[in-house]
Length: 450
Image 1 (tube, rainbow, N blue to C red):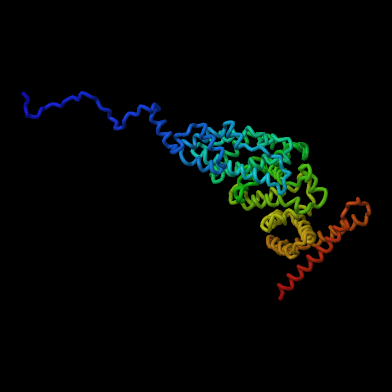
Image 2: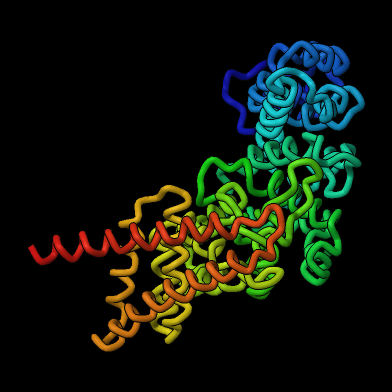
């Protein structure tokens, strides 16, 4: 007989139920984490890996770069795909020596490819620590011999290093300075760059010509030439120079930016000592000096730049004063005045007076306004603390004009000249420079009096 009263105990069910509300899927044998990862592939989840890689063959590098940001799973698949044989053949183009096409269209095309490839690597490795990102990049790019400092047998006719530089610039754009420091240190470890630099700065000028060329091309094409902003270029140039003493800094600056022969690409060490150098031979050096002077960093002071120019002007021997003056003019008003003011403050008025003469000579030869030379002299005069010092300096300028003209005249009258000797032409320019210089001084004096 069944009672209608409620029982005071809990009935134990005959069947045990799962705590999870998920139903068992007999067709899914993978663990839950793998199932969830596959689900993030979206519509790609039904594709086998081989078919997924075949689809990538129809996408541009930029499209694949965008695809890498869809999900972590796709990103991981792309990271694994890039080092494969298919990926290497697709991404690591190595047609670096086919430069015979008009306007070098092939060169611009392959440079654009490596710019896009840098963006792909940037996005694929976004979640990795900097060290791991660099290791991954190196593991893949190490297959390309033309990316190595001494890897190509015809470096002057090779676009390998410029492509590597474009790739590196795109990869590291936007990274903070600490990460970029790590990048530079990583590159130094791979290429043994400091050891190679030690060799070239310790050898006699021209004693290691091939290595000088290799160091120059690597620094210019990989580290310096592709940055859109001057501050970024200054950062990398500072990384190259700062570990070295000032003497070696000047030597490296000449190796990287000094004049080279157009055909062989070898440094012309005697260019600044054997005769006047034109603007094209000095412009790169002047731009590098301006870059360091204008850099918004505490790593370079005005005194550092003055010392650097002083050391540069005796490599490999003391330069002609005309070349010193031309370098200062190309470096800009601020650097030129700072350099000359330093000489005035250090009691080197005689050297300063001779430099004024050659500034006037360069203005005459290169068709700059002569009133600039007069105004820079006027600014320098204000550096002297007393009227007597200013008067002595002006007297030194006039004596220097007379002395240098007489020396040139004696050289012309001696008649012992080579066929390419320009002594008479230099004398002609110097006499005109003196006349135009004093004309500007008279104009300035008359305007002041009226």
